[in-house]
Image (cartoon, rainbow, N blue to C red; front, side):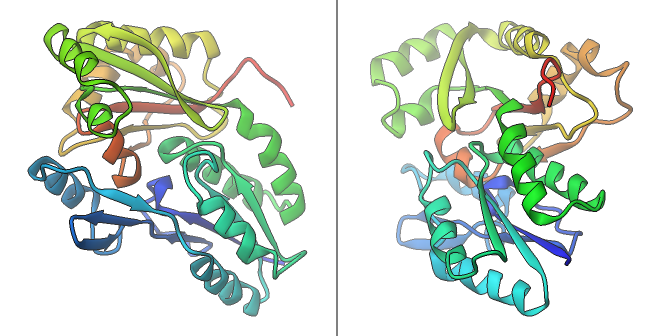
Length: 283
């Protein structure tokens, strides 16, 4: 049977050239206006609104009905379905997917990526690699459940301001961070956001990222992505230049994507992220 991958827009997949991938939109609300992420609100438009707005937008999970509709469409075409969602600890979207899939036992499977944005995207891309190799749906799901533990997502934030607005850090901490040019370095660990450390200035932050990535090692045989928040990629380009020793001997090009509203709401513009499978681990 052919396989349809269904995911949410928190994966930040904007290039939808593959017909075997369905991306369902999260809802992003600015004031009284709701938008469908990636449908009537592009990443560029999101950051323009975020920068202009005095209040943080809110994000909403995908309802079970949307998953059920997508599953029904695929199943009616004779396909099996694998749903890959953002971390269940960050959103109720996973539960919505499970509820919808429960009506299609043996035909629809749900995987909690335990990640988000480029980390979630890396797992989806890995699923597509396995599918293209001819693996069946249950085998792919089994593989994803073990391999997802080896995905590392590490990010350097430009400001503490949006974490302050979201109540994640105190006003005093955010103010001190601004004065001292503190750049928080965060990761997704066990499906949750964890602060790895704080660097003073972008250069030290870039060095911190390089150090953390070296500790894990990148498995270049599996998908890896770089991402950035905001209206331009200048900070990411600087990071790539500073960290070229990580990439030059292993790859001719780097997969780069923008980070959309689901995570952008909480970290603000000017963040850079790297997601990869760790090298120092084996099946």
